[in-house]
Length: 88
Image (cartoon, rainbow, N blue to C red; front, side, top):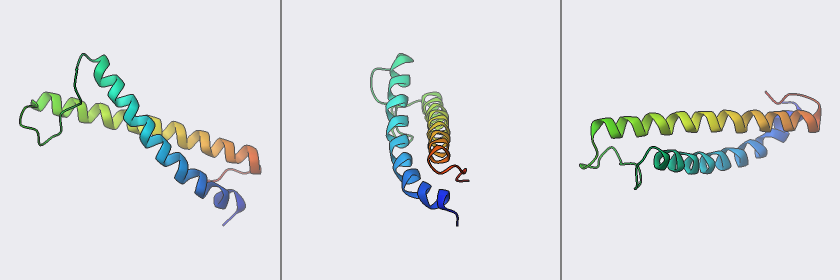
């Protein structure tokens, strides 16, 4: 295993946790921007409609994937700047 992969491991773990928090915040803001006052309904909540449940799940998944990809890419770029090699 090369030095950039070893250096990226702790960075990747920290960035993964941070990206999860950031994605959760972004989702809550997007949900509010769509005109919903409370939190997104859980799939097991009886009060949520099918449409509401599925739209919230799709939105949450899309936001999480975009944030994770952006954070992972930024972390890999940072490691390349520090070590001179790509960690992948």
